[in-house]
Length: 358
Image (cartoon, rainbow, N blue to C red):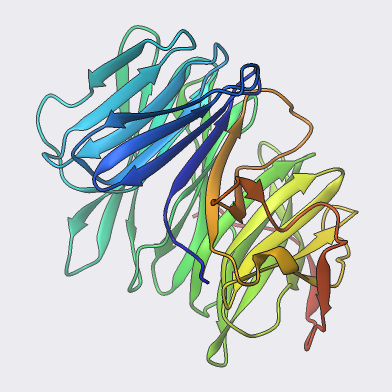
């Protein structure tokens, strides 16, 4: 079996109904599982779709699905809790092909992010941000970035006060930056560089929890990849690195993913088509052994993008899991069905210095 790199969007509403979205043969298919009646429905909600789509849910249980169609128009689909569906064409004319499309909600106001290629020889891209004020759509150019060889993803995270965007940019070398959009002032702040290693990097995930910014990515080490974890003290005017640690063995890890669940910070990843993870009970100061999850061996594994409108006691924006025959998450929780993997090399460093703005 294998790790299937197919985008699956999993949304749980305030009634515990499950909505699974999947791109299949150019169509966005919605699978609806009713918690109360146990009914199951399947419906195509988007046709002639390019590779990019995303979605989320607002505080009124309306689901928003954004996609670019094959004529390069941006289409927003609203699925209301009574089943009514509304489609809105956001573009007056076709735009360029977009990359890493993201949608996140601020109560009932959608915010949309994506890359557009500006110059192919230079690998230069522009990050766009569109948001709805309740009366009109506003557009911001967040930044212009250069990729090394491969365009790395951007990651969006929302707090009660701001939307934080993390992304790669190359000057002499490629580093990870964040930029913050203040939801009250409706303006972008200066970007801040987080990393400072010259070694090449891949993948990206981060979260903010209890005034700490937790960052993970993969870094090349002597021909292999390792998973790196960094923690920063985070407030409005200061981002200060506190911890940097190598989490994985030097193998072939992919898609490191941060999850906060049952008072533990989990770092979960794929390695040779298996799900591995470690957890911290003190928000990154120390880490458990590496666990390999038995239920991932011999099964097809996918990575869900997840939104939950109900419980706020955890942070799960992405999770690995099984897709068929049942939907389930893998890589965090009880470690009863795991095998401990020896850690071949442990690197731990603590820093305490201000991260410069760029």
